[in-house]
Amino acid sequence: MLSGEVSVGGSKNAVLPCLAAALLTDEEVVLENVPGIRDVESMSEILHTFGCAIERTDNSVTISGTREVYPVDDALTSRLRASILILGPLLGRFGRVEIAHPGGDIIGKRPIDMHFDGLRGLGAHIEQTNSHYVVSAEKGLVGGEIFLEEASVTATENVMMAAVLAQGKTVIRNAASELHVVDLADLLISMGAKIEGAGTNRITIEGVSSLSGVKHRIRPDEIEAATLMIAAAVTGGSVVLKNTDPENMGIILTKLRHAGISFSTEHDRITVTAPHELVATNVHTNVWPAFPTDLVSPFTILMTQAAGMSLIHDWMYEGRFFYTDKLVTMGANIVMADPHRILVYGPSKLSAKNLESPDLRAGMTMVIAALIAEGTTTIEHVEHIERGYEKIDERLRSLGAQIERVE
Ligand code: EPZ
Image 1: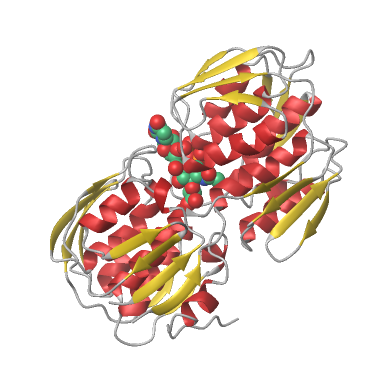
Image 2: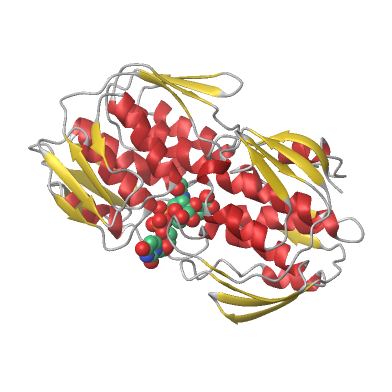
C-alpha cells in the first residue's frame, strides 16, 4: 500500500519541444522544473551538436549559443521521436535542415508527413535521400494558412516553431490543443513571438525578425500525476502529489473519479485517500481535451482491479495494447477485441512474472501491476520507463514500495 508525499515531475512532452525551441535564438534559454529523464538527455545531446552550451543543474537546463546548423547525428535522432521537433526551429532560423526518420516508442506507424505538409505550407521544400530528409526554404519561410489533416501534437509544435520567424501571418487550423502545446506557445511568446489561440484548434502566428532568450518553468506532467494516482489507488493507498496542475487536468480527473479513485485537489496538490471503490469505466481516447492516449496503459491496470467489465478503445495507436497479454499471464482478465480495443473484466488477483517493458507507458503499467502482484516481479528494459519517469524506483520506494533497480 503506497503512502506518503511525492513530487510530480515537469512534463516530458512539454520540455522536449521547449528544448527544441532554444534553437530559435542564440541567446540564453533557461528551462526550470525539467525532469531528469532519458529523453531530456537525448534532446540535450542533439542540441549540443548545434554548438549549444548546455548546463544542467538539479531541475533546470540552461541552453545558449546556437550558431550554426550541422547535419544531425542519426544515432541521436533515431533514439527519440521528439527529435523531429528540431525541424521547425532549424528551418525557421537557418533555412535548411537534414534529418533521418525519428525513432521513439514502437507503438504504431506514426507517420511524419503531417509535419512536412505543414512546413510546405510555409514554403519549405522537402527532398528525400535514401535515409534522410533535406528540408529547405532558400528564400526564407512565408506565413500561410495551414490545415493539418490530423490534429498532430508535434506537427502543430513544429509548424508553430517554424512560423514564429516566417514573414507574415500563419494560421494553423485543426491544431492540437494539448497542455504541452500551450506550454510551448507560452515559452515562444516570452521569447518575443506573436502567437494567439494556443490551446484551441486554431492558432495564429505573426512572424517576427528574431527571438530573445528567456527563463521558463515547464508545466507539471499530467500523465505522470495520473499514473501515480492510479498506483496509489490500486494499492489501496493514500498519497499526496505535489507540483501538479489539477485545474487543467480536465477529463483525466473526471475519469479517475468515475473509476472510483477518491481524491481531493488544492492549488498544486492532489491528495489521494483510501478507501477506493474501483468500478469498471469505459474509455475512448481522442485529441485533447478528450482522454489522452498516453494514459490508456495505466488506466488498463486500474480497470483490472475494478468491479465489472470495461471497454478501453485507443483508435490512435495500433500497437498500444500489444503488451496486455503479459498482464493476462499475471492473472488479469483482458480480451483484445481488435488492436485498438480491449475488454477488461475485474477485479482480478495478479501474480508475479518476469516481464519486458516494450514501451514507456506499458513499462510503467507493468511496474504498477508488479506493485499489486503476489510475489516478486522482474521487469527488463527499464530504460524505456526511464525515458519518461524520473527515478521512479526511488520515488515509489519513498512511498513504501518494495522496488529496486538492478543493473
Ligand atoms: C505526441 O506524439 C506525444 N509525443 C506522444 O507521447 C503522444 O502519444 C501523442 O502526441 C498523442 O497525444 C510528444 O509529444 C513528444 P500525434 P506525436 O501526431 O505528435 C494519430 C508518450 O508516451 N492521429 O499527435 O507523434 C497520428 O497519426 C508519447 O509520451 C490521428 O490519426 O503524435 C499518430 O499516429 C508517445 N488523427 C497518433 O495518432 C488525429 O487527429 C499520435 O498523434 C491525431 C492523431
